[in-house]
Length: 224
Image 1 (tube, rainbow, N blue to C red):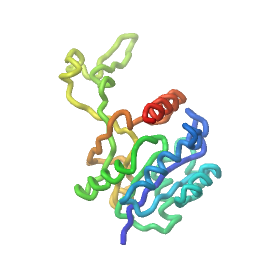
Image 2 (cartoon, helix red, strand yellow; image 1 turned 180 degrees about the horizontal axis):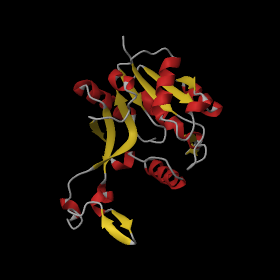
Image 3 (cartoon, helix red, strand yellow; image 1 turned 120 degrees about the horizontal axis):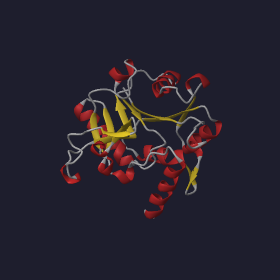
């Protein structure tokens, strides 16, 4: 029977936040938050961490999930995540899972219930799923390019409209991607069409900078 497989890609290297997947956040390595959410899911059949880092591998093994050692040639800063996904599936002899769920450890606040709800959406619509959050005050109607020292509106037709009257727009928050065999054969994670799974902005923190870690600490502290 085809399985629902979660892949957690967790390289050892990172330019913005060195060693971020194993950085301690309120007593736990960052990746632990994603592994805990995956383990709380009631719909996942397998959880796999793909990594080139021995410490990350040890954290994953201690959590009780499967680990695949990622070769250096697909563990560079510019290595496409699909290469790591397909390598992990091949290494474990997993052929065409019913659902491939990509869970990036840099999105630590998604919960097991989010994973299950996104999988329900995928299975109901038979369409790839992407988690999103509303852009709020970061609406592109308020954004500009700078050309020849002058501001050029990205959306001039909306630049003067009141915030509450702007059309709702959404941002991929990086927490959950779900694709099926067809997308994997085409080497796609981000594709069209995709169905949105909307998440609150306070669960959509994405760790790319040291400031993001400070924000995460604050959010976790507020929840205690």
